Image (cartoon, rainbow over all chains, first blue to last red; front, side):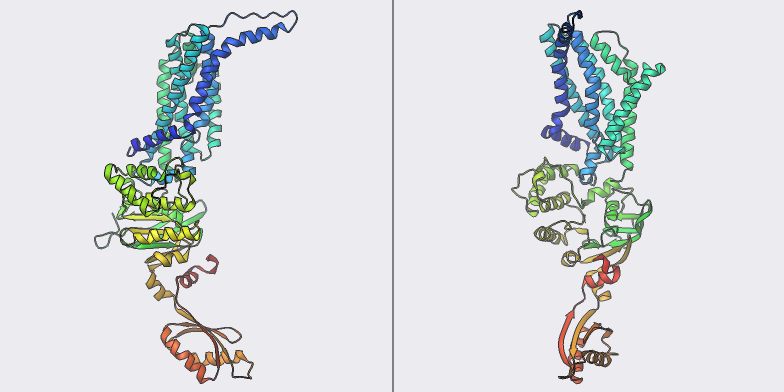
Length: 255
Length: 325
């Protein structure tokens, strides 16, 4: 792991000095702000739309913090995961394509350290994004609805973060295997929808796979019961395997 | 096992180094030995396999077969050990555009485990050497020449025993080329410099040794002086005319050729046109004495006598062919 800390420091400085600081945290902040607002105004908009149709009366119960949290969770599981896939699709390949990998990998920086430092920095960015979005969602929910249970929000966001970290690990592997950033992103998105489809139609693995974390996350946001232990363990296992495969593939790759 | 012969292994040694890409054999059994302390030109036309060889030596690619050693260490087995002894500049260096030159040099030094005053001293010295002292702009705004000079500076941050440069001057304007060649020339004697190029004049200007690679094979390797002596005979271009009133210059050239045939200093004689001869000579001073005497004895007029001394270009053309230039 020679050179890991030096390269991680470089990665974190790069995050602070370039656009990378703004993309995922920016999207998460946007979702954290807009989700409670949308939860608040959606019933009013639908009711008003109904009033324009003669004889149609649409009535919604007053929205609560649960609607705000549910909206936030849905956005994380859809938009934010796709944003994570796109943002990490060139994690390794972009360094190779720009020629920067050649300059650092011909110094005493091991390829494993290079790979893991890239994943670690992206994980920290993801953690910061999750924290920013969650804080925004908590604050807006408390302001708009007068109630915002912190534990439900933290658990829901925490389970989602674990699933998103797995996405980063898989994308890191794909960005070693594919020289094209677009190719890796395409395969990543196809994989995401493929896994969701398989898990939703194959009940035998539904409760055990990492994909179950998205369900656990939504249940936690709603304050309902959730099963997260086995999905968390399987996420760590699959993520670890993806990282090991990525590091091995990079060791073998000719640059 | 290093391929050393007398205790100290050469800076670079390869044995039967071969690299196959699908149907293309980029390197075909390359045997090479680069003496320590030399400025070694790795010369060849585009597509000869120079970059492939350098990438294998730098640990970026693996040979299909054969072996390569840097300072006695196997480049495949002793990867980190080799890298700590090596400075490397690829043909198109990629930098982090948000960094400044001092930041990139510090980062490079830290990867070698350097720090504190030692690192700061080296950064300062290399900024001065590369002419980037006081340049605090981000690297993203640098010219190609500035990036190339920074590339050489970063390759020197660990005071390497071997500096490998891949086509360091190929994309530079004349001023940039001059600056980079001066940097390379200034390193001679302090560290072994191994650089690939297809520019003959660069090699003649700074190198003391050269290997010529063509179609993945080493066609020759020697010191520059030895190579010129061995393969690059001097040439003399002559143009003669007959006595006044005699328009048959061709006859004049034929008569002179007949007179010179068999001279001990003459290697070859070729009639290249009306009144013109091209002589390949082994002993230029003897030829310079004998040719005017022969012209005078035949009462011919000497319109032109031009000496082309042995050059690396002659050698290169002879070994690789005109099409490579």
